Length: 264
Image 1 (tube, rainbow, N blue to C red):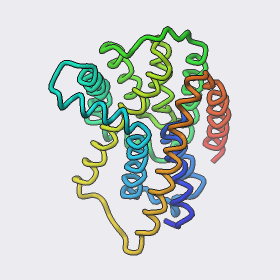
Image 2: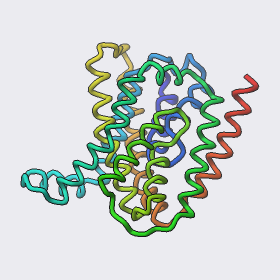
Image 3: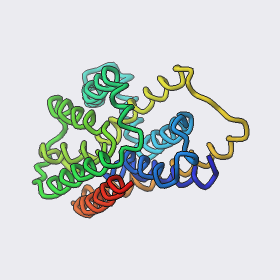
């Protein structure tokens, strides 16, 4: 992988992990445009590196929230922090189940299937459009809601469905306060990302080619910095009901992906 390719894909990962435009869909499109030789299908190590970068950027942006959660858990009481942590665990159940049971089926969808990506981007556009028009009742995330949001996160494992778009849209459609919805959406994915990284590291399938340190570092830095920017920006956008702009974007990119996929 070339240095410039690593930077481009790192920026794509960092921005689209938080912006509701589907990181998986954009990475599939990016791979198709850059060519299979530039981004090998087995570049698992690079994927691990950029995903770790975005998880770290989330922890940095929400460092105060994370510290409050850790401090609350150490009190060993049924407090707000303990309840929030349990809701995060509940939200992970659908994605963990789907990921473990249907791992091979899911992986088969990530092979340059641009037509599928295009259709799923249309689905993301519809969700964002509906969420922008939903009334904000100011409700907190309940235990029942956390499971529903977790189901939407599991569906977002399909390439082209935005994880943040699906989870935030679901939260808002349930009437949850928009700022709480964004906070819950971003924090709920951190344990899943770290769990996936640990799984990949223990699989023994990671390969490292000599001289790739600079490439990995460039991808990590690009994903980390762009992730911090996108995460902070997205919180403001959700609060100010600006999701329709991303709905239009997903509709356009999805349409272009469909045309590209059908003609190639």
